[in-house]
Length: 117
Image (cartoon, rainbow, N blue to C red; front, side, top):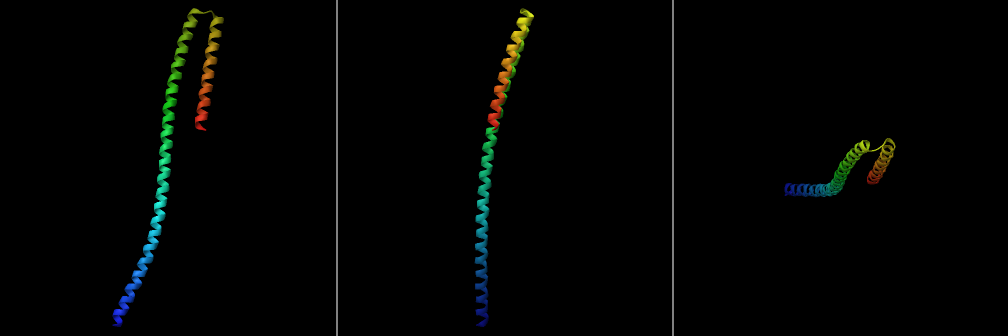
């Protein structure tokens, strides 16, 4: 009878230890779950940021292609002006085109700076 009581007491002590261990593991699980949720939220935010950056790069690429086409067109116009204009007229038109390109570049730089801010 004493052996049975000792075995029962040992089983109850083991059960109590298991309950304490279960509570500790449950707490750790809750902590890990909260950490996982935080990491998942940061990953989603990074994915959204990456998507925005990719869209910005695509838009910037389109702008650069348009700017390159504008420069090419200005170059063609300059060649035509050289053929048909006097040196003074050519210089004035060249200065106008150069100023226009500088203004466009400044506007694009300001847009880039605003996009990065």
